[in-house]
Image (cartoon, rainbow, N blue to C red; front, side):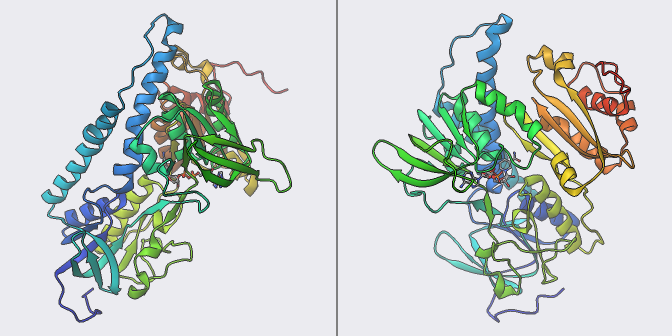
Length: 487
Ligand code: NAD
């Protein structure tokens, strides 16, 4: 497609493809497009590439969770006869590890790879001015006009800022602020018991904060099955993390003493479990909202929903055929690994390949302690949809490997379609669950039956073995457990 429609102004930059945003979705799209041979420009408002995930999300949080896991493991090691003293935490050093050794290395790597591929990166905030033009406002106050033939919008999402919180007070934090690790507060309130809330609760608890979590729904991490979340909820409780369910923050007041929050019950007319309290810091982690509404997309004729999502088809095209959109702003789940796949697809379709979205499932992982990972249909969903399912569940207390590392609290659960005996969903609660779930995503993609999974030889003793054993539980061939036969 030729760049036909525009303002008639002289363009500062002309390109075949422009990618708006350099998060995991955006850089994947740009790099793939360049590798296929499209002349590509990538626009990013911040100085470093990688978006929320690399700079202030998935990656720095994992660096901090690693520190939390070390502290936690050392605190239990006396039970097996290895004793350490209490941890001495050097926050500056920990922050430097996260920022320099982890995030810094990868943002530099991205800039290097962009250069190697001859992807031109432009720093600035871009907005559409016509169906084929973007205006980019640089931080120096200068604007540039970019004319493109095709565009991939990958501008992501931002944390929802609950309106009743005093956001200009540094003690009120979103996930980006919490990752800065300005201090370890004595008392931290986490509003929202979802993935971000629980990952950050894990970090701050390990670093020594007294943590309270309030969650609006009747369970933590409402997207996952209740049984899957239980080992995590139990461990948090043992660690002293206070959790209040069916509770929402109502009134918030900042004073010298701290942030005072009063709560309401999620059930109207009922008293909340906790009425109010005062904390040194508050993290608000109640979800993210798409950035689709910030791009003047209407000037390109691109439809944006009221909430800021941009609808796309199975090839990631918006209603304007030469403009694609990917990642958080095209819909849930807002996950980096969904965005990267969408980015690759959009780049390939833009280059003329006849492809469409084929993934059956997108795995979810909470990198808490223990980790919770799930993929495909959950039991709750299956019940709601009236699907006839069978479940194979293998408790990790029966895994010598899990017990050998002192972590027998988890389990592996496989969900099968009772008609086809094919696996349609899975959940794992336990350490390294996030690394174990991929096999089950592959099994679902391949249409594996319980027999296929059980008959695949898994190394012994591993946590991965629990996957095969859960399949054997479903098939009735398990020998590592004794399950009395139904009469
Ligand atoms: P989330 O949707 O996972 O959780 C938000 C939680 O807050 C929900 O449980 C919700 O019920 C609760 N909530 C909403 N309003 C509330 C209120 N007023 N009071 C109390 N509770 C309230 O969102 P998140 O944890 O903020 O994460 C945002 C996005 O980032 C998600 O889409 C998530 O998938 C993604 N993310 C993924 C990972 C990962 O893959 N490991 C990590 C972090 C974030």
